[in-house]
Image 1 (cartoon, rainbow over the protein chains, first blue to last red):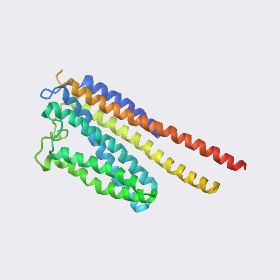
Image 2 (cartoon, each protein chain N blue to C red):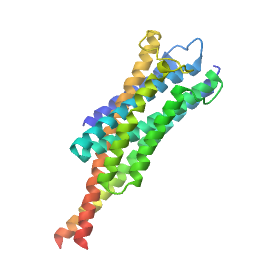
Image 3 (cartoon, helix red, strand yellow):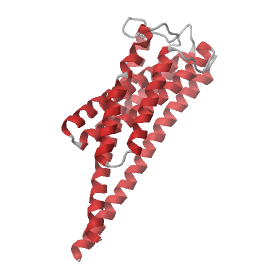
Image 4 (cartoon, each protein chain N blue to C red):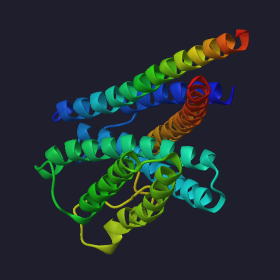
Length: 223
Length: 49
């Protein structure tokens, strides 16, 4: 029931975001139509950071309690976070080509974001190479906790170093009301989508674990 | 409408990727359901023996 409600709101809000980004919002004067990428790029980044924060929390609780439910939440969130951070990097690069005339540059925000992507790719590499469910979860939790240290660095990179990347103008009143409304709708839509995907994936991971345990027991009984 | 191609490309990539991810999840769910049915059959067979 909870998942159906999340899916319903995610679908309605994603459709609303479509309308607002493509039709409702006025075109920005300086950057033109390509600025509209921003309305999805920022929520993609926000959800990726949120997802990695959930990985961090899930990993800490797993190491404290050794309850596999928390490892399932953490690994499900890492998977979703990786999808969102990949899309954030791709959309940023597509925006950079007309705005900066380059697809990629090694400046602080872009570089720290790419490092973030590699950290969570490493999270899954570690999990796939380690044998045993308990060791897999334990090693993953360590990477999930240490990897999260890069998230504040990505967020603060625009203020800590000189960078080409535009600063965050949402809270400083740098956006016109229709632009802010569009961004908020996209942000809420992606949050609903994230929580829907998280509940689906963590439940599936719980089921996968239960099924593999039952299969093991059955195999032992049959042999 | 200068640079509209970049905006469209970004939109298509975002929604195609998200839909593809959701499709993969749906496929995994189907496989899980099949696994559960198989286990149920095995358990029923074991109970009959």
